[in-house]
Length: 165
Image (cartoon, rainbow, N blue to C red; front, side, top):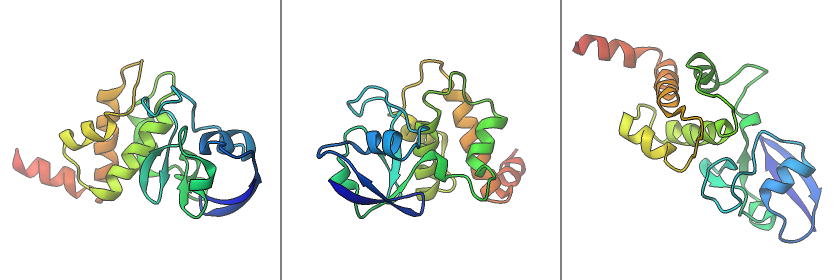
């Protein structure tokens, strides 16, 4: 089946068997390997990508349903070779150990920050709930997401928090 996928702002034509998952097409046909295969049942978050701005499990999404939507992988978060503020915050907060869950967490956090630029800790925990991490970097990931939110807000969140204390 020939189809065109819009991935990271670029239309990419692929020829895959019917019922191929978006995850398989991204990794095997487009060489975008940051999106990981975890459980294959949409229960771990390792395969998350943004589909029209929402975090979606690519392991269950058939390519046929992915045609005609905007798909963003973790590779598409960086701009002009620079890490996004969220990616940079994950580095600065050391919010990864083995790194297997990191791309899914970055996708979930990106979707959250688009919907809520100043999320509470509870909102961050809710957004990360579908992302399983065996290394337990959740606390550092929460700090990274808060750091990225502050960076995007130009530091005004941090200044506001200081003024309250």
